[in-house]
Length: 123
Length: 110
Image 1 (cartoon, each protein chain N blue to C red):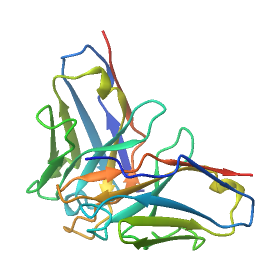
Image 2 (cartoon, chains in turn brown, blue):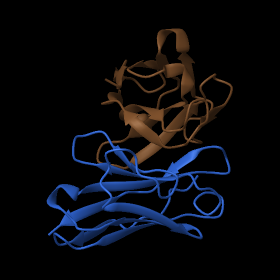
Image 3 (cartoon, each protein chain N blue to C red):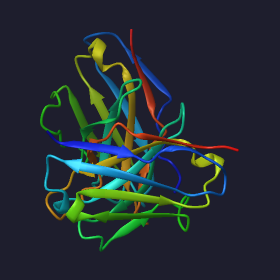
């Protein structure tokens, strides 16, 4: 079964850091780009960051650029999001999502989603 | 990175057809064929319904179709069913090498 399981969310104070993880199974992880997408409570979807299959291409939304870092470990079938200098507006459910492209070609659509991990930034 | 523009809500009766629009610019929707559509039921993760403007993933009913004209993409649902009631989001690749979503459309099946 193709599956993505996020972890690492929680309550954190403004200005602090948090690291999210996403464990992938059921597909050849190192063939596909991966992404993080977030959804603030009661709001719409926002793409946060994406990383190509070999980490050679990485992108960030302007809202997180310079504060968040995406990475992956293909040997561990895992995706990560290091979040620094967190702000109240970063409060959201963070989804890990598999890119829909063919092997090693990014398709910029998201065909497999995890259930998300909640990040709450509050003092 | 301005969000793509979608109507806040649309509605239709069972059996009818509805269309949801998604308007961007030449730097996103109009410039690339990487437009996607997602369905999200309350409390659930989004589900990919259309990718690359008009392609349906395996398992998505052919009642769902996508198209694009200029800077506007559209999702059409024909033969509306009660289970289609959900939020729908469009997304597009952009010239900044990022992805931008629309604000979402709430579909109500009357």
